[in-house]
Length: 462
Ligand code: NAD
Image (cartoon, rainbow, N blue to C red; front, side, top):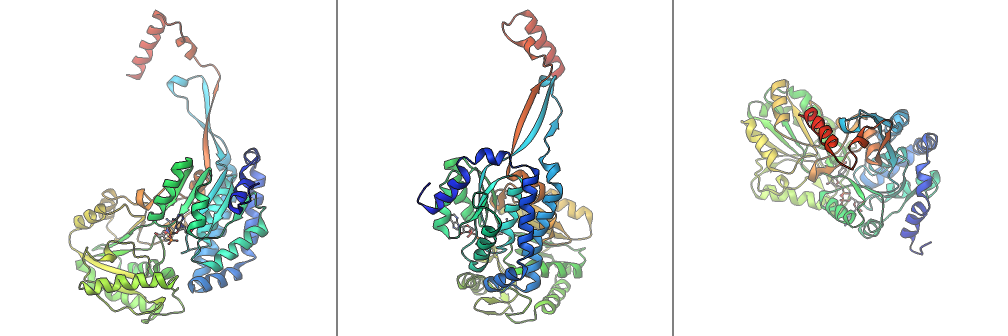
């Protein structure tokens, strides 16, 4: 056993464990999920306290966005696991007529999960649920930015699982780099596109498969026929939950000229009703660290210096909702992922311009459209791409257990949640069994009969 604790933790899971993993059956997996559910249920208060300490999270938000999603993921996996694990039979093809084929999901093996700080419980344990459902062993590295939740995760996991099944290793970049150098079978990373690139480069060395859940700029469009009150409700919720530190929060808002003034009046009133008009509110989370708050302050300063206007308030890590008008594409907040409670308002007349602007940028993680005109919605969806789409809603596409959650290219590779999460952590092994294959008729020595048969096959194939 290695004297390096990180390597030792990996070896405890990896060495001689491969065969054990492969026989970790339905009952074992269900038991593991049940144990995790019991632990999570028993620690609701501890979680609320940790999220308060790390992010100033209101209790309701802590429950809604970190506690319940984990229990939902467990319940969904538990319910469907038997069906997901079943080998799937496939139809024969011409060349394999006489053989029966099936796809058998197998655990990938020892998996590394690297989690971000913004929903530090849910985005750590959600993938652990999928990994366990798929029969894997897991090393989880939570974010160093949320130390109270990381410490809680470490305690809960060590009380629930033997370290050769799941273990938590705390630490920052250096620890992550050390972990990434180990030959994991799969790496599931949630975080920024910049670090996603580093993770994928590290995985190239060991040829570990990867799931990358990344971020980017997710637009929201309020069209000319939108239900404006509904849009104001959902955009307020989606943008300011967790003070905008949400990967699928609407990043910036396109609003049609014809409804802009009416919509902004409704939006301002809705925001004031939810959070008041100052920088702090018992219903609003805090920016995670002083450095992150300074970055947001710099985005505001850059926009204002270049001519934008805003009426939002800031006091250190307490940043209130900011609607920012008069922005231009050269401003930092129109180029970087905002990841905070700042919402640039971009009026438009021509839908084609909005579509062109979306397609010029990186492919978004989420795209939101508010409108009642189905043809317009279809047009926008057909001419853009994104990880997911919300129509007349924000964020909740994330919580649908039967929808895959993930990005495209810079916003992510692969998908999570429910069956998609199970598949991310499974190897789909192809198994073909000979029953009465006719192919031996084509085996050598080749002669005129072989060519006759090849001619027949060619005719069938057209
Ligand atoms: P981050 O990329 O800075 O950090 C994520 C994790 O990577 C942390 O555990 C961190 O310790 C680790 N890390 C940092 N530097 C590393 C390095 N050089 N090598 C290896 N690991 C390293 O991201 P963040 O600031 O925690 O989260 C914000 C970002 O995550 C945003 O871009 C957001 O959109 C994205 N995000 C995406 C999703 C999603 O599901 N798609 C969810 C939440 C957040």
